[in-house]
Length: 405
Image: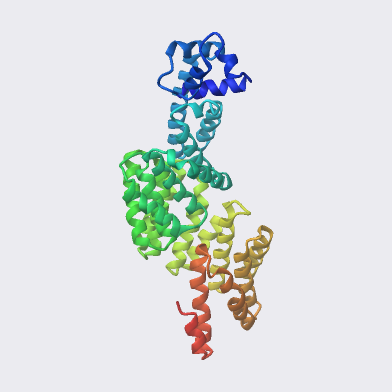
């Protein structure tokens, strides 16, 4: 506990001058030493100053212990994805926020606040917190610097800056790595970012490491998330049996743990897997199951609608596909999500027998708008392939080559 800083805080809060506080107790220069946390400060003098300010040192020491307990509790709540408990613990910590700056936990508290903002997806708050923490970084311990780097990596993932996130989190394994509480989390987030970058082999490798860690620590909710990551990457690697096996475990374990919020994502991903396998009827079945229970007016819902409509298109269910793409177009416009407006418009041109207009729209509108968007890379490859094939069939080989990636 930084007693001197605490004394200065309460003196100024009570609008007392140093002379007023020191009167009859000590000299003003000695009080200055106390407030600067000098080791030369007299212990008995400190006690008298605390008495004058009506500060109970025992209560202060108890508060410091309580802050440490709550910080550890908040971390465990977040690691085990206990959302309601994390919110409750964070609110309890706010009771002591005026005390925290005078404890040894000042920077750890602020770093865990950043993790909490990431946990609750308050990215604007997280952005401001990162800026403040970076300004204070010269005062951090090695462990605190390590945590800030790692949590910044998570922030970059949530912002869709996957290459930066990969660089940041990968560096942690080399620069700061230590076997500790965050080992499984680091492996999990590396698996996540490698998957987003379509490096499925690396994603599976890190996913397996994360899975073993979470099993050893009985972190059942995180196990579900890792199984989802593994299933997605097995699917992208065309290891379909392993993907299906993971999804079967996921459905069973999700229902058992009552983590029903994951179900629409699982059904959607099974639909995606079946689509990759060419089993469009089964894919359509799972996309429909997902669309019914997905929260509307979210980008996940729009992606589900897109895949549902696309599968109907491939099954030549033209009327159903037109209805689904029309709904997607309407929802995307209302949400102001440009990519899905563009994709649905392209397919609606095709469904209305306007192929030439669709291809022009694809070349002049869709591809230029998504070319540099990391999160749209898969769509960019998909639509480039369509355009290349179109020009090839038209005998326009120079233009076709332009779109072969």
